[in-house]
Length: 501
Image (cartoon, rainbow, N blue to C red):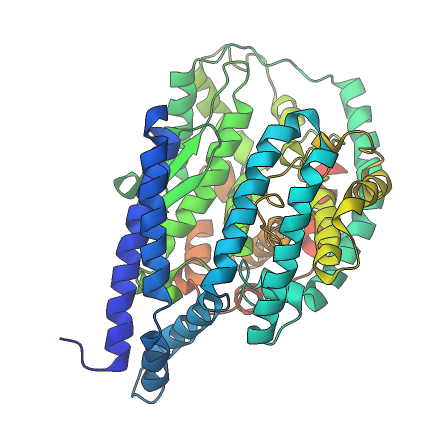
């Protein structure tokens, strides 16, 4: 029987965790195993569970428990947990049920219409639904801002990365944009010179899926993924889901080449390692959850970009590729031949296909546009023209007659997810900053990668990132881990070393 107010919050956390577990597994099963005929009832079940969870998490008595717990004799960890309980409760109760109902309807209508009209790029047909989304986003941003005491766009970012503020991010992104607009043409010219001297070798396809899977599993195991608490499956879109005690990762395969699947597996392994490294004792508190999207993305990009695209990693990995895919897979290849594929840079219209040098420009473009949409400085109808102007300036490409590959390419805006995009590039910056901190703490780290020793990098991240969970805000967690505030310097130096040397 619970006595203290904190005990009541603790018991609530366990019930919410159980519902979250059930919903996570239903989501994974839907993506991996569910027959198409199961969709309608599955949606019904997930909707009911989501409603139950929201109702349980926003019950009025929770405010009383939080207030009472603040007067109780708690240890430091319980006080930290209480702060996160309050933050979660405040964010969950910012919006009225009437507003949420209207918002869900607008999002469903918009996303369904987007799926129907995106293939033809029918912006005019999509615009009325998008205008409805922008209106509800502005309303949500203001409702949250009023309760949280933040600027409207900051209140939206707070949902994805607690503590992130435009005042801190704007100058970092401005520095990065200035650097990349100069860097990308230089890197492309450098690449062209290298490829003219040593042309890109074609991959010796086909690569059987069972062999690719064996290679991926071997790499996951070497990187420290715990298969007693996770597994790898196939889905239409790769993702990392499940719960920390049962992490579910997926990838997709093509027999024409093996690198996209392998890099997808390694990216998701970064997410999975973070989830498996979270503190088990706090798992039912908001304090025990992953900190936010930028930190989560930093862990996946650390594995995929900092580790798995490094020359040292490929010195270790090439024999494993030959062992699992066959001696002919990369027959006669030197390290430079595989790195030419792994480090290929291309200007393109599509964010999800972009390389690490051009990707941040895609994100900064979206960040600038969505800030202006939320503030009212930009009307929904004018997005294609602004998008095209920025695309021309940043990447020298035009989308003016091609909204399908312009502002209609992502699901985020049709689904009302505004404030999410900065997390992707913040994750890349944080990953580079972490690498520099690890190099200082572990001077032999590059040799470790060369010999497939990943314990050191995992130990550093477990101590400084994973075990801290949501104890600190995103900026504070980064400052404590690396000794520095967020900046673009380390990412810029990383790109120069990799693409100009």
